Amino acid sequence: MTLNGAVASRAELEKIVLAVGNSKGVAKVENNLIAPDHDPTQPSGIHVVEKGDTLWKIAEACYGDGARYKEIFEANRPMLSDPDKIYPGQRLRIPGASGAALAKAGGWAPPAEIAGKS
Image (tube, rainbow, N blue to C red; front, side, top):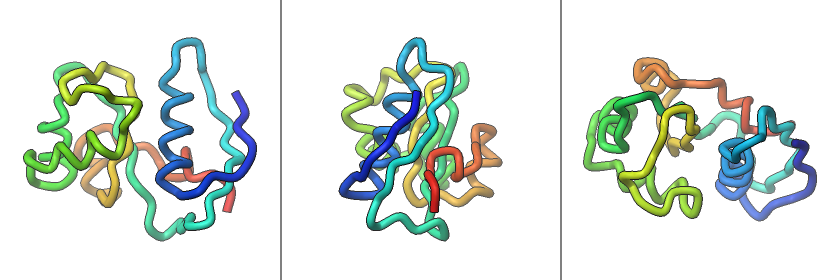
């Protein structure tokens, strides 16, 4: 699937790419979307959900504080309608998490995967 056009914000761009990429039958997303506030030096992270993951556990691994799971939930709305309903293989946007924290969590993917073209 190829996405083209302009969006209002980086957050919107990331949500669109993740929503499409998490759709059944979509194997690859080519992102050509443009966002006015795109800043490659401040990427959001991506976490690939593994069996046994919860938003609390992901927040603990990425932020050092499980109570921040609400930030991950809000960053992935409307793709997520319930914080308890995530599934293995699903990709979640992790705002403000460093690459090192995401790598430690085991599900980090390069930000360029969803960042689009600079």
